[in-house]
Length: 60
Image 1: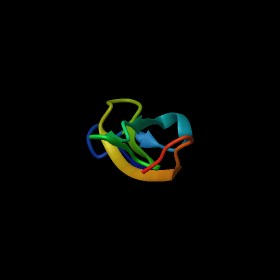
Image 2: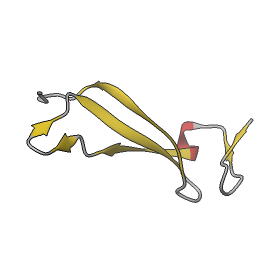
Image 3: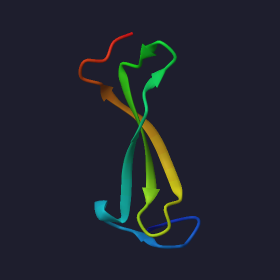
Image 4: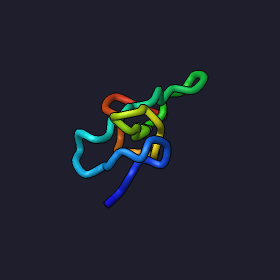
């Protein structure tokens, strides 16, 4: 079983975490990937991050 490192909440289902897409634009160029963080639904602590597929309409 997985627990939040900050508050100790049990993370068993998708509803136990919040996936938040991060801004993928930097300067003049939009990134072709979607960046996200995963937060604990109970306390909001960030417990992971990553990159997901191409962003529709994005370009480099």
